[in-house]
Length: 537
Image (cartoon, rainbow, N blue to C red; front, side, top):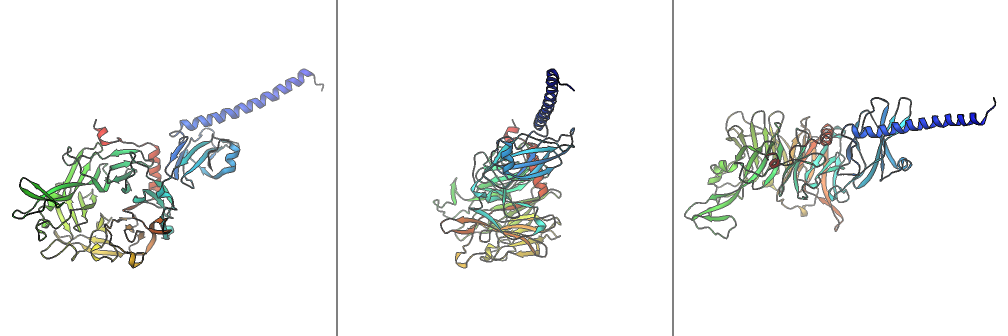
């Protein structure tokens, strides 16, 4: 065949046209893939440039149902904008079968780049644009400063996680932090009682700030309104425990600063911080615990004052030689609401007592712990002493952390207790785990100011416990008292170059399924009112 100049140009034109068509097709598919990612399940997550306070991350991206094929999520360290550099710094590739995937990245305080690669039915690959995020950090999750040192490990609970509230962090069972609580309304106060709710969110308490429900991202979903029993009076401080109930309401422990009238005919020193004088009468300043239930709008729907009960109890007759009531305060530190049977168990540390309250009318139907008798002190004859975290197990028994301060330096115990079928009966101890001795020298043992501590029954009826201050131990024990997992909370002393026991007030455990729910609930932006007061406007 003889090729003319016109034929040659025609062939070049056809070849170029085909190349351009293929190129345009690839560009179109790439752009379509990129656009689709922003239109599918909540768009791209993490969002571009996001700064995350967690290492276990929910990624979301579209599933190309029309083109089919498979997907993989690729992550590299650093902020990268060139595909070749991305491939060189890629740390892992995870296959995925849907439009979202939960992945753990290695470090806090690190920047990351990620993309999704789609492999079509004909093995052709399309990569999404490169996306960027970073993880922040705080000293509590810096394991060179603060750590959870695991000393006994078990595969049985390897997929679980736990919150250590005074470190403001969530840990895996290897003791590595994977999430921390960001500053709430700019606050860096000591927090208490971080735990998951039945609704797949978190409740957290700041004793000097307030009580909040937040999601995994730290967004405020609900804020306690700081209104008391009448709905108009102020709460004088939330403390110790904050729980979202199965019915969606919120229950909190609060303080009530009261003046309890002292006997007439005696002279009291008004310079004494405990004494107040009013209308020619003398009063003792005593704090009593209160329980308040709010609905989702922040309205008070139920409340209970411990002062109404205890001022008419045996406490009224227990006096010192100079006429004072022989209690510093009536310090409530836990409650458990049995919503099915409409009963509440409220624990009082300073008087080593647990009361059972009828939710219907607020009447105390049972009281556990030795009552005062003439000539006896609080330290004698107690089944438990300065206890924390009284709760109810699946079989109806009670269980608690007995700090055992009355027998110091004897170690604390975890107790299970059965209520009597007879009205007015005492508790029967059915199980006890005596915590091991502290890992410290006798010369360094000091009497703790406050025992703290918590215990929660797990689905298999083992217990997950946290005991303090001397012991700072977290552990899982089964019914036969076998230890399946154990760890110590510690902080590094740069001066002495030693690791020292570090305080945890409470620790609560979640499963990997609960963590997954927590992550995806945050991505849905399952938000309620930012504060109860806003919802009332």
